[in-house]
Image (tube, rainbow, N blue to C red):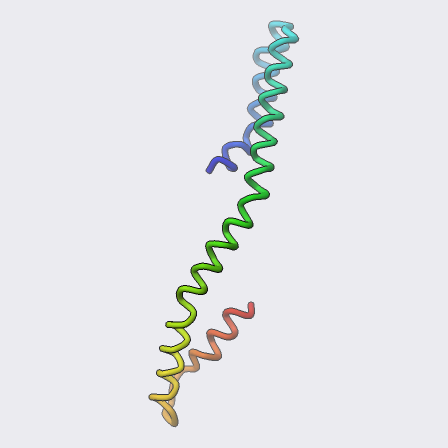
Amino acid sequence: MIIDISMLSPTNSMFEVYARALNSRSESTLFSLTLILLLTLAVMGTLESVRPRVLLRISSAFDRKLSGGVFDRIYASEIRLLGQHRSRPLSDLTKFTSS
C-alpha cells in the first residue's frame, strides 16, 4: 500500500509545483517540494527492491511447511485408488508447480 501511494508522488509533486511554487515564485518551496519528491522516490525504490525478496522468503517457507503433507496425502490417495478410475492429482500438482 505504501508503494502504491508513493507511485502518486510525481503527480502530486507536479500539482503542488503548479499550485504553490509557481504562483508564489518561491524557490525555497520549489526546492522543498523537489526534495520531498526525491525522498519519496528513494523510499519507493527501496521498498520495490526489498519486496521480491520478502515475498520469496514467505513463499519458500509456505512451500516447505505444506509440501510434505500435501505430497503424502496425494501419494496415499494414489495407492488407495490403484486400478480404479480416478483423477490424476499428482500429475496435476506437477503441472501446476512447473508453470
